[in-house]
Length: 204
Ligand SMILES: [Zn+2]
Image 1 (cartoon, helix red, strand yellow):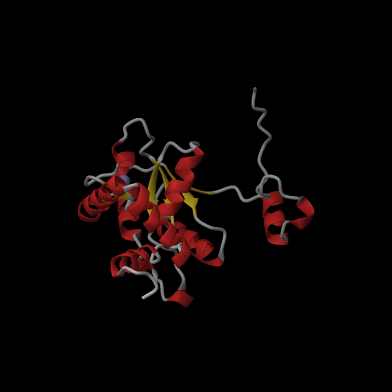
Image 2 (image 1 turned 90 degrees about the horizontal axis):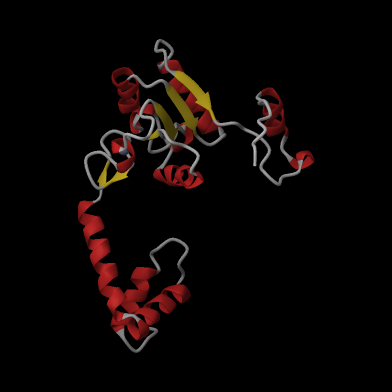
């Protein structure tokens, strides 16, 4: 045991299980709580306990939810006919933070990756195809990473939905803002030329 208390040791061990938290940061957090903020300990315990018991998965889009349907699916001011297909809930959070998308989502839970043993039956495809069929979805935006696995997944979805009228779009793939053209990889640059878009003059 490194410390004079087994209880501190246990708390440090528990905190160091979190991603990106080593023993040093874990110890700093634990000492902060016991020395300066004992009340926060109860808040942390309460919020984590209730999250652990009550957090659900939205039965429609597979996002985190407090109810059967998540806040986004229940929000009538969002366009329920436009669905952004993403790999994980972290992607939903990233897109939501841009404040630019007002449709809904569908979380696949991964992408097709034969090398990792992930096939279509491991992902939330059936529910997606049912949504397209039953809910009159007009557009699916493929919010997937531009990787071989992402491409394979997009190909699979578009093949499965070939008979439907749904419009399938992919995210614009281009040069990152602040990036230098000459350093962009050839594939990105080539696709950026092919999928160029009209310049939109935004009034200030
Ligand atoms: Zn939902």
